Image 1 (cartoon, rainbow, N blue to C red):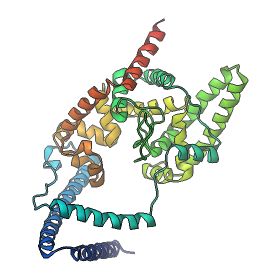
Image 2 (image 1 turned 180 degrees about the vertical axis):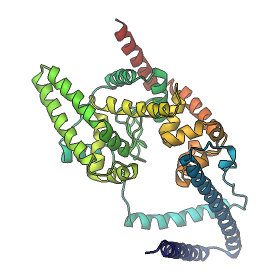
Image 3 (image 1 turned 45 degrees about the vertical axis):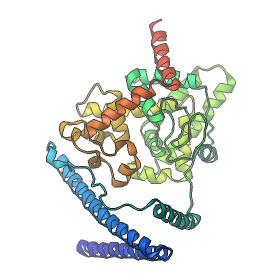
Image 4 (image 1 turned 180 degrees about the horizontal axis):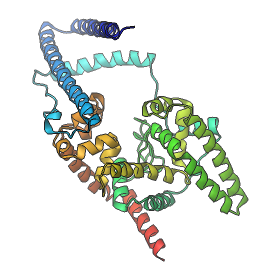
Length: 400
């Protein structure tokens, strides 16, 4: 099919989707208006019109962000340095129209809540959690992680990080921001690490809050190294029970690697695979006392190595976290002079920008300042203090 014809068809399909959505919204508005007095109807219509205008302004703003981003990609391919004009230098437009009265706002919220319940019944699907990761890991790979104390997990994490050239400040400050300073080895985003209350809001797991797609990617890159290290541990142990445990882990990890390498080595393919039971079953290795500290330390070291290849060294914890949050390449772009002064909208998708409240209404430089503020505060929490002590203990043991 010719490219022009494909574009025309895609455009028509897009218009059809927009028209269908507009019709659905109009029908919803009519149903709600029927419950209001004439004065309330007038106020609601004025608010609706102002909201629609604001949405059009936002659409235009984000379309400009996308155009600038595409232009930067073209410049990057030609190795042309970015300047301030390569970015949108304003924040998203703020709503300037009338608001709803408290009564109308409550009624509109209740009306939409009823609609939401009907939709959720048709397509409710919660995100997988720790129990799901463990069950899938055992089912597909025969893997059951060895759970160890938090103190020992931190010591092993510190030992591994230091062996990879990461320092205490880098690792502990990332931990402090990612987990709030009290994170546990089995902490999942959305679940309180101490009370265990809440619901998963993503697959982010552990001290470095790796996503399940991250786990798959790290297995593809470093799985052979992990297996060789387990084999070395197996060869050195004289404990029969420990030997059997390591044999099972080695066999499970080999099965995971085969599965991980059955899909193309591509981030988007890993994301798609991670949504399957076989994909998120691999995530349980983060909980293992032997593998988890290696895996998460290697992930952080990978960010440092990426920066070094681009000529950036001596990263702070804040800079590593910026790369961790936005992606290695984007994080480095945000650290450069032109990127530092640009609003964070230039570096995140529209949805991601509004989901992550921490990045909203800031430039890259202001986001780094916010990281520092949060890291300073969370570094005073018990978990971060224990983690820092683990680094000190490992360092002292090496000096003996």
